[in-house]
Length: 422
Image: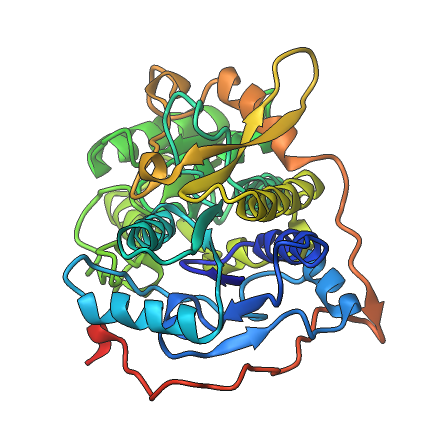
């Protein structure tokens, strides 16, 4: 089996990897388990990290090891015309007796998993292709939540924002005579699930806070007026904005999938908004300030949700079971069980239905004034963040994270440069 990761990481992505490895190594159908070093690029370059030879203790530590440093990730897109890449994948599979390919990632990664599964079928290669969901944006699947209820990674980033807003409120409350407005920018591109999670910090709506999602267009003039209205009432305000909120030119840069890289662009939406608020003037004395946590929200294990950690493992475990059963062309999925309380079940959905999908934030979860989210969203999201802190082992005050050894398989094929990199 080859398992690989793609796209942006998450605090819990390695627990899906762990679920895959710990389950697959006990299944008689599956032999050696490799990791594609830095995703599909590692497969193309025949850089295969042997996970079966790693210490079980180090594999277990993947539970609390965030991001993708253990096996790497990539943003390499397999496009239909790149026939040489597909030929190379077949060669690598044959050279290493690969019968299973599992890809952990978001909607673009599910497209890669789908293409590999289809390629295997079309070329008569006996390889099972499986997808494992991952994205902090929660944008894989459908807006009816029938294909997947939520993606591993989202619950932890939602918990991060719940905590950040609680602490930012103490900053804003104490500093408001001089700094009455604090603008916080959340990740998620143009999908509003992450900034919406700020509401979990204050479900009773006692904090002066406005939340602006990219799905709800608004002008700077409107925001300026609404900010000043609230300042006249409360004297201070926290403003949460999506990084993809369209307020003006930020000098966008794009990745190989065509997605805007907001953290790499010339200007942030938060800074653009702060500049405009300060230039146009506030209704009270003082100035607006910005806080942009950046990629910390997708790799901070200290704020991870224990629910998210468990479900990430379950999604990986389900993928291994699907692979061993020969269920090619599916993604493991998490569905909310019916009945009182919060429970989930793990199932499968066809890869073509989630490949390149982009779930948007439901319009009926945005309040009528466009400055907040509804209680229905809070009800949906609250169980995902859990109630406990993750238990992270420490040695001499430092976190004990997984340390996989560089045990790579022997390369049997000529060197290869991925087609899109030439």
